Length: 457
Image (cartoon, one colour):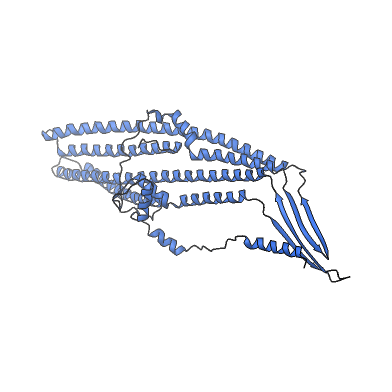
């Protein structure tokens, strides 16, 4: 074999041997193990404590006896599967950056032929080695990188959207849970007052001072209250289960947990400058991750167009090599490229059209966001007005109860009238509390419209 051919073949084999190859490692999913790990999740897990401390939520006592909404939201960022999927998609997009930045591989073609006829001592062998080297404009590779980076940014913003969605769902279920708990407490108080009133009515009827109709009405009201208690207990169980699942815990993961209401005491004042419609709309347009994501999708379309424009220029393939052909030493230097006859006009036109579509989608989305903020701001203000009227009613019935209590103490009225006044206060307080929760829901919708925390703490 000719020494030149031997050197070329050895060189090609050496280059191949020096390349680093990744080996395949199977990673099957053990469904039994994943199910067991999920069922074993609980808020006393030391991993949760470490996660909270890493995120600036120190835990001097562990396990916690009570949980507030901000701590549960942070736990959800660790356990919720939707966020895990979003993070995995970011990693997948980042991996595409590696492909985008790769230069074309160097190709090697090795051929061997044997001819059956031999004449005058001519070697019957033909050996050849051709190297294929592709020249690509650096701008083309850069456009691929820009496109991949824009896709990474889109996925990162989707991750922020998922985080906000998780927070929004948790707040909603948290409010459901504390509402059901408070309703149960209020209904139990109402039941106790009604039962005391029933005893007084029975005595009064025995003395001929009350009618059977009034007695039957009170009994019916007690039955309705008992039924309402049963319904609210079922409502509480459902709310606790949904809250646990939204955090990433099993459905019974919060059954023994005490939830605080410290963050739902003072409703924010809508007259503050930071809660004015113009200020909220301005923040929404620069802080909402979905707005930024739609804008990033336009950047992706821009990068795609730039990529197609650069694809007008073909790659050039140079193929130097050496061939030993029956005692002839042949040096080869070949080249190839595509003739830019169409100049990639079709893909460029499609990319321009997609960019225009993304532009219009952004403008439409921007308008939608402005309208959402406006409606949410009006909804919050309306909820506060309704709550204000309910509180006035509570004040009125409490004032009436105070007067009746004074009259009772002086012997000017009976115990039954006092009980009826107490019941009126309880009913008014329950209605006021439910309207207060609705105001908090309206405020949550306002925060959701801006996708930013609007409280000062």
